[in-house]
Length: 482
Image 1 (cartoon, rainbow, N blue to C red):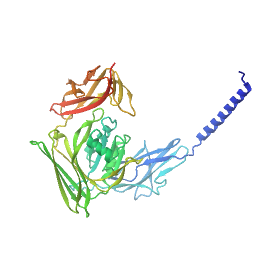
Image 2: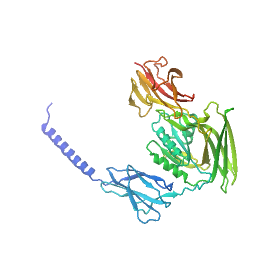
Image 3: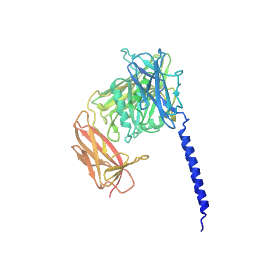
Image 4: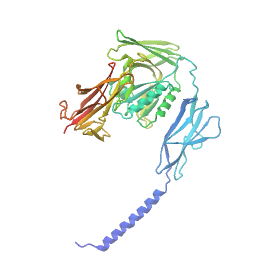
């Protein structure tokens, strides 16, 4: 076969010319940025009280680079706008005055295609931060917000958010109660999946869906702000008192709920009394305990209260199988009015019927007392493939825990009130070892309980404190031995 060298040379030259033209044109077009940036989300109208530190959050995008992000703000009586930059997508404001604050945000990119503003670029439109005085004034009744966290024992961010909520709850700065709905529990799963149309874990629902925070990308301050917003929203004047009494001789819990309607019209809604564990039997992947873990409803019924009327409800339960020192009842009144909620804001996917919570109150079954220990696994890591005891692969989509070869199970146990006496290790409900000294661990190469079949096995640990109280944790694993 003879090659036409001139033709080949001509083709090569044409390719080089076309490539050069493409490179020059592409480079030039890329160097000319005429696409403006875009503000995706920004905190809008919010409420807070005097003395609060609030955060304004913003997310944005651009085809090249956003170089200037500013928050403009002023009190409602000022004429000039103040400004400050956003640091890592948030700006902080201290509320030292009862004067409401107005604000707007702008962004610009390196090429100067902005500024782009929301809700305006010049302050002609703005969002408002409503500053409220602490108006309890010694009144006995306080309107509490109600918070529910959807969590799972294999969820990485769920224990972090649970701890944040617990810290906010204990701070005394926010009036709210919260319940952790662990998806492995049937009652919790029904609430999450059938009523809230849950997308994934973690998700926090505030006041029955008035605010929803999905995923692990939020800061602690965002949860605080969402609770504060719910605290100052307008609600019917419905008052709820919940009391819990425990009879040590009969192991009977008596729960009373008193509701008052101080409105000029009748009130229709639903009352639910959540029975919770202060230190939940469920925990995160490494044993971080969930707080106020949901067990069941003591009361769940529709109510109708006449204007200036009141009703009293009572329910009893045998709690001989539970630890009364670790129990708390939390009552919530949900309005009968249906609102549109989404489990995936701001994308507004997974819609659900949101019935906002108008009142909440809680009562410990026994005040104080000794809480049970917490226990979890430091090894193996949930959702990883392990080889000879070492985690080597993190499954992204599916989350099996796979053990190949010799494996060491290491448990972490702790108790705030007592000493850990022992930790027991179980495989498929059969006790294999009892360890009385930390580190609490169990090693195996082959175990007769494991079969070389494609099914999961359960490894469980039970921690006992010196008063006989227990904490448990379990993981499902798939094992292959060499």
